Image (cartoon, rainbow, N blue to C red; front, side, top):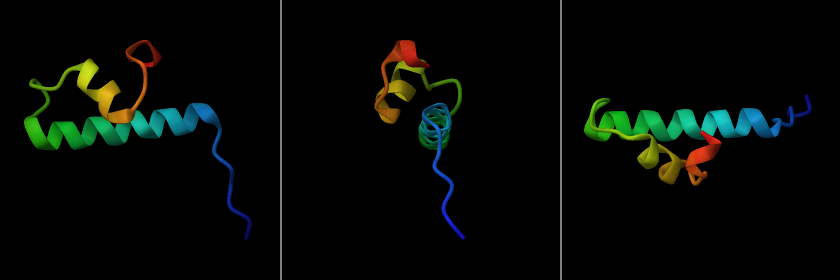
Amino acid sequence: MPKEKLKKGKVTRLAIEDAAIELFMEQGYHATSMRQISKRAKLALGGI
């Protein structure tokens, strides 16, 4: 079965979700900023 190629938007969404979950687990929801999520996901803040 061939692997499905992910579209750019889906890859970006998954990177943001993964980064956010990691940070929430490390420091809690209220202590996590969008800037930290974008940095962890290696994306520009405006891209979020």
